Length: 363
Ligand code: SF4
Ligand code: FES
Image (cartoon, rainbow, N blue to C red; front, side):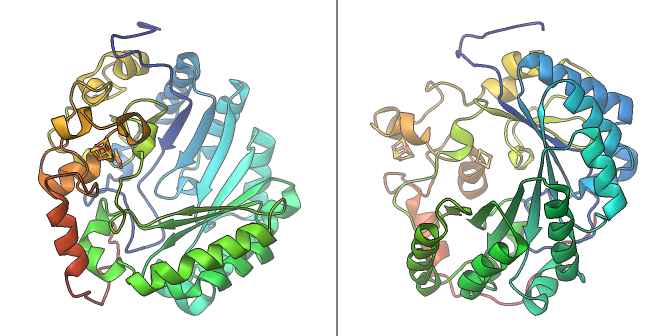
């Protein structure tokens, strides 16, 4: 390790999101990956990834999330999982379920896989396949069944938006039927491709009001059986979310080509000088790079945040959102009612909603 601490007091990261590929069989309109996806030819090799994983563990990472794209698209996934598990890290697979056969799962479990996080697009095939832009729904049912039989814990993740919000109760029932231990119901965050579809994805105020009692009731009813996490839609809120629990504080993301990101959406901040593991060690990038240090601590904050007593609760909100809505990544997140840019969010909320998704295209 080249450096173990820095002047911002950065502690080691807890988790690594290893985006091993951008290739994906689905076309979800809410995809938060960048508009320009990387191709197979840009991806780190097996040896490169082994090296990244070793470095991540040396840096202090405890959990590795294999993600994408669809990580099952990498033929060397079992090798990478075996390497990670051998380093003593907890291994999670974030998957659409497409491509998860019994034999494939067996090889991943043998390699040391600990947990599966399965995306679900709708409560039935009509909605699920429409949003996925592929015949995906039945694969989710099969994948969940395989994971359960393998004895692994299962999380189901649903990105909520106007086209599936009305299915909320059915989605909770569906996750129960799939045997999920944990259900994350996350309202869409508007980064990457999702931003193109913001108007089409944005739930109505009525949908959001209807959702809370449904979630509260399910949380009470399923306590101890299925944990439910509800991620609110932040635009209508008064305060922003504590995005990533602070920039460069807990997690590190490595993109398919080796770029190292302080949050999975950070490539949207075009003013950020992102560094690459092909050129510099992960430890040096974590502790010493401009991109990671840009929004650590409080010196970068605008007066609005620096003088606010919530600054240690929400860290001034989300840097990616601040950049995408104001052009300045150091601005107070415009979701905050104290932000001078709050009008931008109010205008978006007042716009008439469009229909007709632009489906995620491969490149
Ligand atoms: Fe958070 Fe800044 Fe708003 Fe205070 S002013 S609530 S720190 S975003
Ligand atoms: Fe990047 Fe919030 S999504 S900081």
